[in-house]
Image (cartoon, rainbow, N blue to C red):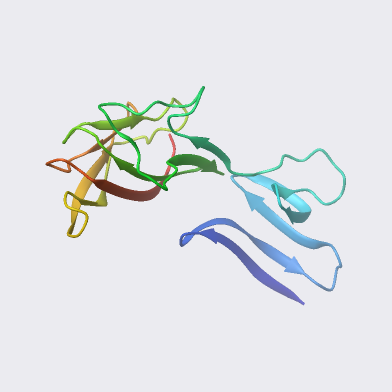
Length: 167
């Protein structure tokens, strides 16, 4: 008996394949063009289950504002209780930020080469200037890696999560 398998993150399929119980081989998957015979899902991601040196796919998380990571710009910083990150998973880049203190209509940070979209993207973020009323605002991710908010006024808190295929 075999069954289709899909592993997704926030509604986006990142791994697809077949599970064959009759063969006893486990999962046979394809991720970003790589084949994994008898694949195993581990705490560190996806790896070949037959002992070969097949690559492991796992999200490498990058914490914005930390040493050797992209810096916040224009006065933006992590909001209290928030950690702003981006990470790769296969061909996708995910961004999850919760920031405060920045200048209206400016870049929050810049994604490094290899983490940028092929074309400029516009997404939606929620922000508040008074801690009570939330408004939606566009966030633009440029091909140069800049992540810019159009939130106007003194932003007390801006929350943003998105994903896209990197170039």
